Length: 380
Image 1 (cartoon, rainbow, N blue to C red):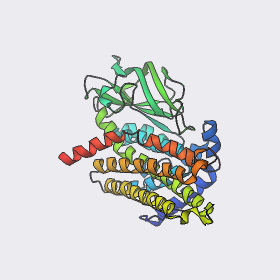
Image 2: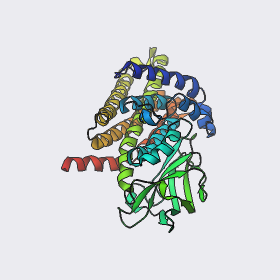
Image 3: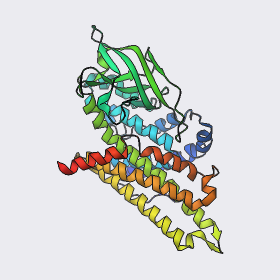
Image 4: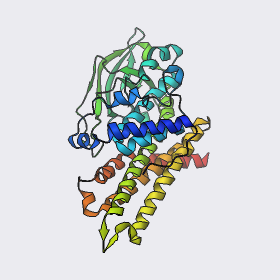
């Protein structure tokens, strides 16, 4: 059953209807085959881009959709309810575009933003390293001045969604000492000296590759530096607040899909002469699942509306990410329980939903990091 949404405009209603139509006709029919075979969905992002769904929250002046974050996240949720891996990639694309939008010069924006937001390109975010995940200040990948105004980059990055497939990478590399010695660069996907490792063998999100990247004395011109030298962590963290909301929306989409599947199954399956939903024990499980999904959606919408109003929302973004992803893990696990033994097989999607939900508690800052952010907000 479609989610009953309170949207701010008729345009937003139309956009949700368009998203549902594309998700049902383009994504839903092929998701199972691609996830089981672990094959890349060629052409899917081009179709989403042609519909304007890859750049919804970005300014219209640069080719974006100019939509409030409140609307963009609900579009993302609708995509995730059909295909979480694709929704994560869309969220990461938006995350990757943010640094240039927020910190780039007018000349950099004129040069690169139209292509990045055209729908023809997909971006990736390159912050984590093998020894530096939550501790971003421990980055070792280095960008050294080449004496001619440019930089030579050497080192490795890890956990890159769309690694090896993206058209551009927002890279954070060390240009000096300490936490103020990290800078942000916009890297073309075909850069000489940039290579990628074998895709990770993940628990879920199989259709979109996650890889490591290796920079072997890769040269970039000075105009690839975004913001000031040493401003990298500030840029990274400003983007992560928005990215956490994206993952919260993806998690809610996953949870909604699991709830819908479990509810439909409970209305069809009978035991002891009754539909299983009519047994109070199971009916209460489904009621708790529905309450968790609705609560999680409310938290990300609250943070998104604060963002749209220009108000601080960092703590609220962490709350949303924490609540939504924990809810997704609980709801998808309960959905498998509703299906019983059948839910433990790959004959039903709830098995995949449960595997996919786990990563939402980990990336864009683990939920332990979110609790740290929230706790700090209570002491300031």
